[in-house]
Image (cartoon, rainbow, N blue to C red; front, side, top):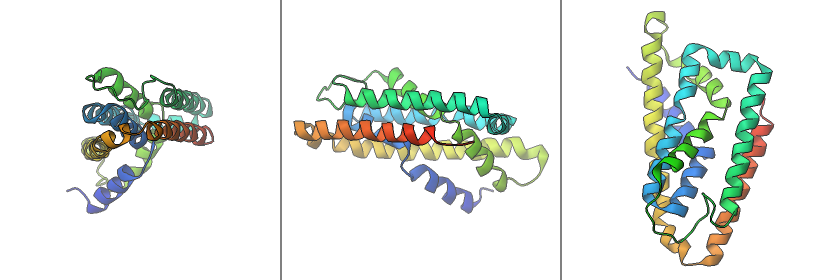
Amino acid sequence: MISLHFLITAFVVVVAPGTGVVYTLATGLGRGRRASFWAALGCTFGIVPHLAAAMLGLAAVLHTSALLFQVVKFAGVAYLLWLAWQALREGGALAITPSRAAPNAWPIARRGALINILNPKLSIFFLALLPPFLSGDPASATPEMLLLGGIFMAMTFVVFALYGAFAAAARDSVLSSERAMRWLNRSFAAIFAALGLRLAFERA
Protein backbone atom coordinates (compact mmCIF):
# COMPACT_ATOMS: atom_id res chain seq x y z
CA MET A 1 0.00 0.00 0.00
CA ILE A 2 1.32 3.44 -0.96
CA SER A 3 1.95 5.67 2.03
CA LEU A 4 0.08 8.98 2.11
CA HIS A 5 3.23 10.46 3.61
CA PHE A 6 5.17 9.42 0.50
CA LEU A 7 2.56 10.94 -1.82
CA ILE A 8 2.64 14.23 0.07
CA THR A 9 6.44 14.28 0.19
CA ALA A 10 6.74 13.47 -3.52
CA PHE A 11 4.15 16.12 -4.43
CA VAL A 12 5.95 18.82 -2.46
CA VAL A 13 9.25 17.89 -4.13
CA VAL A 14 7.74 17.87 -7.62
CA VAL A 15 5.78 21.12 -7.25
CA ALA A 16 8.75 23.05 -5.85
CA PRO A 17 10.27 25.21 -8.62
CA GLY A 18 13.48 23.71 -9.93
CA THR A 19 15.43 23.40 -13.15
CA GLY A 20 12.87 21.13 -14.82
CA VAL A 21 9.99 23.42 -13.91
CA VAL A 22 11.84 26.46 -15.25
CA TYR A 23 12.66 24.62 -18.47
CA THR A 24 9.05 23.52 -18.98
CA LEU A 25 7.75 27.04 -18.31
CA ALA A 26 10.28 28.56 -20.70
CA THR A 27 9.35 26.02 -23.37
CA GLY A 28 5.62 26.62 -22.90
CA LEU A 29 6.05 30.37 -23.23
CA GLY A 30 8.55 30.13 -26.05
CA ARG A 31 7.08 27.33 -28.17
CA GLY A 32 3.53 26.64 -26.98
CA ARG A 33 1.56 23.88 -25.28
CA ARG A 34 2.65 20.97 -27.47
CA ALA A 35 6.31 21.82 -26.94
CA SER A 36 5.79 22.07 -23.17
CA PHE A 37 4.29 18.55 -23.23
CA TRP A 38 7.51 17.19 -24.75
CA ALA A 39 9.58 19.21 -22.28
CA ALA A 40 7.66 17.66 -19.37
CA LEU A 41 8.06 14.19 -20.90
CA GLY A 42 11.80 14.67 -21.35
CA CYS A 43 12.28 15.88 -17.78
CA THR A 44 10.32 12.87 -16.54
CA PHE A 45 12.41 10.33 -18.45
CA GLY A 46 15.55 12.09 -17.24
CA ILE A 47 14.66 10.66 -13.81
CA VAL A 48 15.08 7.04 -14.98
CA PRO A 49 18.90 6.85 -14.75
CA HIS A 50 18.84 8.25 -11.22
CA LEU A 51 16.15 5.85 -10.11
CA ALA A 52 18.16 2.98 -11.59
CA ALA A 53 21.31 4.26 -9.87
CA ALA A 54 19.53 4.34 -6.52
CA MET A 55 18.24 0.79 -7.01
CA LEU A 56 21.64 -0.56 -8.05
CA GLY A 57 23.56 1.27 -5.35
CA LEU A 58 25.41 3.47 -7.85
CA ALA A 59 24.12 6.56 -6.07
CA ALA A 60 26.16 5.57 -3.03
CA VAL A 61 29.25 5.30 -5.25
CA LEU A 62 28.51 8.74 -6.68
CA HIS A 63 28.14 10.08 -3.16
CA THR A 64 31.48 8.68 -2.01
CA SER A 65 33.46 9.39 -5.19
CA ALA A 66 34.33 13.08 -5.17
CA LEU A 67 35.82 12.95 -8.67
CA LEU A 68 32.80 11.26 -10.27
CA PHE A 69 30.43 13.64 -8.52
CA GLN A 70 32.42 16.66 -9.71
CA VAL A 71 32.55 15.42 -13.31
CA VAL A 72 28.78 14.93 -13.51
CA LYS A 73 28.12 18.13 -11.59
CA PHE A 74 30.19 20.39 -13.81
CA ALA A 75 28.77 18.78 -16.94
CA GLY A 76 25.39 19.83 -15.53
CA VAL A 77 26.66 23.32 -14.76
CA ALA A 78 27.96 23.73 -18.32
CA TYR A 79 24.64 22.52 -19.71
CA LEU A 80 22.61 24.96 -17.60
CA LEU A 81 24.83 27.84 -18.70
CA TRP A 82 24.32 26.74 -22.31
CA LEU A 83 20.54 26.83 -21.73
CA ALA A 84 20.91 30.33 -20.29
CA TRP A 85 22.64 31.37 -23.52
CA GLN A 86 19.89 29.71 -25.59
CA ALA A 87 17.26 31.72 -23.72
CA LEU A 88 19.17 34.95 -24.20
CA ARG A 89 20.28 34.50 -27.81
CA GLU A 90 17.86 35.64 -30.50
CA GLY A 91 16.61 32.53 -32.27
CA GLY A 92 17.98 30.31 -29.49
CA ALA A 93 16.32 27.02 -28.53
CA LEU A 94 14.64 28.57 -25.47
CA ALA A 95 14.06 32.10 -26.74
CA ILE A 96 10.44 33.27 -26.70
CA THR A 97 9.42 33.91 -30.30
CA PRO A 98 6.12 34.52 -32.11
CA SER A 99 6.69 31.51 -34.40
CA ARG A 100 3.66 29.22 -34.77
CA ALA A 101 5.58 26.41 -36.49
CA ALA A 102 5.08 22.92 -35.09
CA PRO A 103 7.82 22.20 -32.55
CA ASN A 104 10.44 19.52 -33.15
CA ALA A 105 9.64 17.12 -30.32
CA TRP A 106 12.91 15.20 -30.04
CA PRO A 107 15.30 18.11 -29.30
CA ILE A 108 12.85 19.52 -26.76
CA ALA A 109 12.49 16.20 -24.92
CA ARG A 110 16.25 15.55 -25.14
CA ARG A 111 17.09 18.88 -23.52
CA GLY A 112 14.61 18.17 -20.71
CA ALA A 113 16.07 14.71 -20.13
CA LEU A 114 19.64 16.03 -20.03
CA ILE A 115 18.69 18.64 -17.44
CA ASN A 116 17.85 15.85 -14.99
CA ILE A 117 20.44 13.30 -16.14
CA LEU A 118 23.27 15.77 -15.54
CA ASN A 119 22.14 16.59 -12.00
CA PRO A 120 24.04 14.20 -9.68
CA LYS A 121 22.00 15.29 -6.68
CA LEU A 122 18.98 13.42 -8.05
CA SER A 123 20.57 9.99 -7.57
CA ILE A 124 21.48 10.85 -3.99
CA PHE A 125 17.99 12.29 -3.50
CA PHE A 126 16.35 9.00 -4.53
CA LEU A 127 18.75 7.05 -2.34
CA ALA A 128 17.56 9.16 0.61
CA LEU A 129 13.88 9.48 -0.35
CA LEU A 130 12.80 5.94 -1.20
CA PRO A 131 14.22 3.63 1.54
CA PRO A 132 12.16 5.12 4.43
CA PHE A 133 8.97 4.19 2.55
CA LEU A 134 9.94 0.56 1.85
CA SER A 135 8.43 -2.34 3.82
CA GLY A 136 11.84 -3.57 4.98
CA ASP A 137 11.55 -6.92 3.21
CA PRO A 138 14.72 -7.36 1.07
CA ALA A 139 12.87 -9.67 -1.33
CA SER A 140 10.36 -6.96 -2.27
CA ALA A 141 12.71 -3.95 -2.14
CA THR A 142 13.26 -3.75 -5.92
CA PRO A 143 9.59 -3.91 -6.98
CA GLU A 144 8.67 -1.46 -4.21
CA MET A 145 11.32 1.01 -5.38
CA LEU A 146 10.10 0.61 -8.96
CA LEU A 147 6.53 1.33 -7.84
CA LEU A 148 7.48 4.38 -5.78
CA GLY A 149 9.78 5.65 -8.53
CA GLY A 150 7.04 5.14 -11.12
CA ILE A 151 4.58 7.12 -9.01
CA PHE A 152 7.13 9.90 -8.58
CA MET A 153 7.71 10.00 -12.35
CA ALA A 154 3.98 10.04 -13.13
CA MET A 155 3.47 12.86 -10.64
CA THR A 156 6.40 14.74 -12.18
CA PHE A 157 4.95 14.48 -15.68
CA VAL A 158 1.44 15.60 -14.66
CA VAL A 159 2.64 18.57 -12.61
CA PHE A 160 5.19 19.68 -15.22
CA ALA A 161 2.61 19.33 -18.01
CA LEU A 162 0.23 21.55 -16.04
CA TYR A 163 2.98 24.12 -15.51
CA GLY A 164 3.66 24.05 -19.24
CA ALA A 165 -0.03 24.36 -20.13
CA PHE A 166 -0.40 27.44 -17.92
CA ALA A 167 2.70 28.97 -19.50
CA ALA A 168 1.41 28.22 -22.99
CA ALA A 169 -1.94 29.81 -22.09
CA ALA A 170 -0.09 33.04 -21.23
CA ARG A 171 1.92 32.90 -24.46
CA ASP A 172 -0.41 35.12 -26.54
CA SER A 173 -0.34 37.85 -23.90
CA VAL A 174 3.45 37.74 -23.83
CA LEU A 175 3.77 37.78 -27.62
CA SER A 176 1.75 40.98 -27.82
CA SER A 177 4.61 42.87 -26.18
CA GLU A 178 8.16 42.82 -27.52
CA ARG A 179 9.32 44.33 -24.25
CA ALA A 180 7.74 41.47 -22.29
CA MET A 181 9.43 38.92 -24.56
CA ARG A 182 12.83 40.53 -24.05
CA TRP A 183 12.29 40.72 -20.28
CA LEU A 184 11.23 37.08 -20.03
CA ASN A 185 14.11 35.85 -22.21
CA ARG A 186 16.58 37.70 -19.98
CA SER A 187 14.82 36.44 -16.85
CA PHE A 188 14.96 32.80 -17.94
CA ALA A 189 18.61 33.21 -18.92
CA ALA A 190 19.38 34.66 -15.48
CA ILE A 191 17.48 31.84 -13.73
CA PHE A 192 19.31 29.10 -15.65
CA ALA A 193 22.64 30.80 -14.97
CA ALA A 194 21.78 31.09 -11.26
CA LEU A 195 20.75 27.40 -11.12
CA GLY A 196 24.03 26.49 -12.79
CA LEU A 197 26.02 28.48 -10.26
CA ARG A 198 24.06 26.94 -7.39
CA LEU A 199 24.81 23.47 -8.73
CA ALA A 200 28.48 24.38 -9.02
CA PHE A 201 28.63 24.90 -5.25
CA GLU A 202 26.71 21.70 -4.38
CA ARG A 203 28.57 19.03 -2.45
CA ALA A 204 28.01 15.30 -2.49
